[in-house]
Image (cartoon, rainbow, N blue to C red; front, side, top):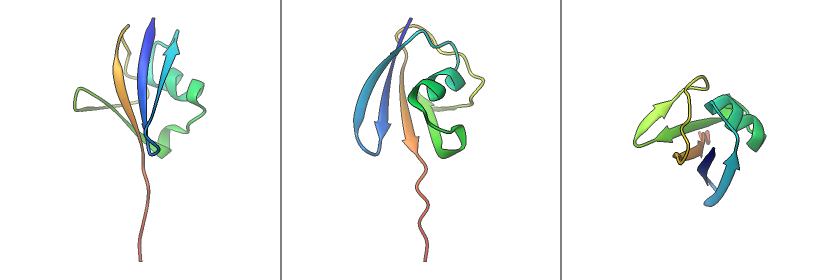
Length: 67
């Protein structure tokens, strides 16, 4: 099973094998679930959502700004 993840920012693409759920993917990427949004086909995923072989997801880091 292979999932392609596009990390933004920076714009970087990685392939991750043998992950079943979003939480598994984030653990392999060493990313805290609360720090990112994970999107597949325009839909927001939760850490418990299942991934499928060949999935392409976007991992978007939540950047807070303010002033």
